[in-house]
Amino acid sequence: MAKRNSHSFKKLQKELKRKKKAKEKLARRQGKKDQAINDIEQQKYSD
Image 1: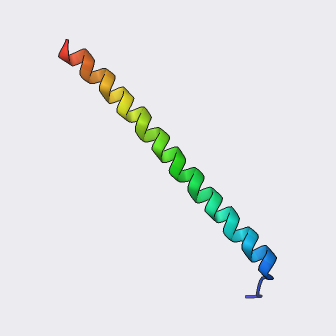
Image 2: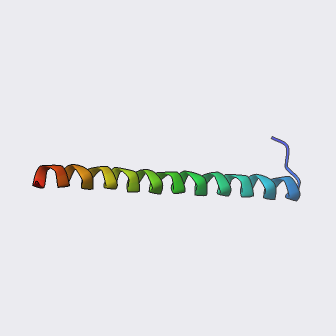
């Protein structure tokens, strides 16, 4: 495999880091959404 120059390697690393951060953020959002749904369901059953 050919070596990448340092600029394109840094760009690749930056892009991978950005994608990882976006994926983690999406997971956090999904977790909050799931938690809100669970809270609503618990309130229905406690009434």
